[in-house]
Length: 254
Image: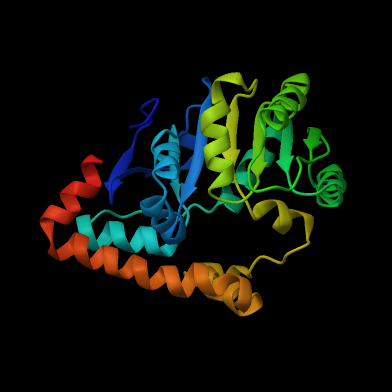
């Protein structure tokens, strides 16, 4: 289960989901923050190491309408969606106010350069560092040591990791103890959103709870499997959890 207890939270499909304002998060100790949505839930059901990494988070944010609706339908719990992009923006504002520092681990050198240029305009008080790891399915021990060294030499207040799920969650879970950062969070596509290399769906889509549809329309080939194929699998999981108590209990004790 979780490494540390961060309240308040609600249990949904076996995962303790954060259920409060980001202002209420305790930032005095090292925190490993991850997000969960219908896609990552389904992938974690297929990948036990990914599930272990998610459950090893100190904070799991509800990043998707699928999770918030499931919590309401299954348990009557009201969850407010907190996307990785929202957490990213919250942290940048907090760091700028306190003249803090952040480090971006992931993406390409070109994307990181665009992030740095935007940060200098939007949040001039933040000290910035970055490292572009090699693009490969799995990192070698030397790759990881180089990444850890780059982070620790900078010693950021917040480490943003963008290497796509489930690679980023597994890597941060495995290396949390070695990383010299107060907050470690995996935010995936947010690197591209903030750099402007991929446009995030507008606030209208987000307010309607249809950010997923906006992304599907913009990138149908890449997002079809994430939102349609795994979306149907997720609905099946929710139906089982609702109408088959044994299935639901098994999800919550694994």
